[in-house]
Structure formats: C-alpha cells, structure tokens
Amino acid sequence: MHTTTHIDARMNQRGIRKELVGLALDLGRIEGDRYVLDTKTIRAEMCELRRKLKFLDDAERKGGVIVVAASDSLVTTYRAEKFCRPGTKTINS
Image 1 (spheres, rainbow, N blue to C red):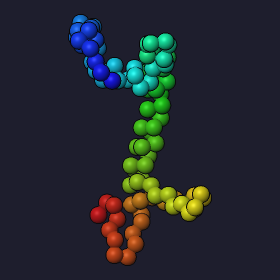
Image 2: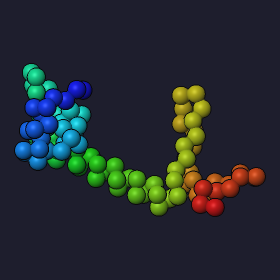
Image 3: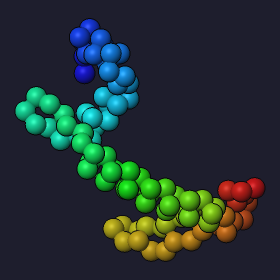
Image 4: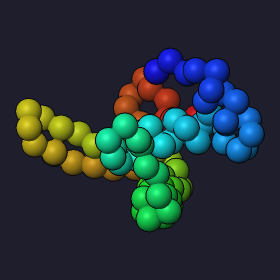
C-alpha cells in the first residue's frame, strides 16, 4: 500500500514504526476506513505465538518431525533425527 508524507510525519511524531503499521494491517479488524489493532487482539496473537513457539521447541528437541502422507491420509510420523535411509545422511550429520 502506498504511504503518504502525512503518515510518515505522524509515524515519526508518535514513535510508530512501519512494522507496527504492518501488524495493524495484517491483524487489525477493519472498521470503515480504519484498521484497529487493540490490546485484546494483541494479547490473543501473543498467546498463539507462545503456543506455537512451545511446539516448535518440542519439534527442535526431536531433531525435526517427519509426517508421511498418501493421497488424503496421514500414514505415519517419526523424529527426523532417527531417520536414515541407506545412502543418505541424517539431518544432524
């Protein structure tokens, strides 16, 4: 989206970085011509990110996770660090 000199000036005056404007555009609810990113939405997003980070930490401790799918079915799953096919290296090697 194109920015105007007016928003650039207001961002500088109010200490609002372009990344915060981007968050408001991505996560905020639309009310007429405004994108509203309120504290309730911010807290919910932070909670979701913490939850996702917890699962990513778990996946990292397992050396990654592999899921095998066939057609529209999930067949099996295992730790990536345990997988070693003849002639291949493990992820941690």
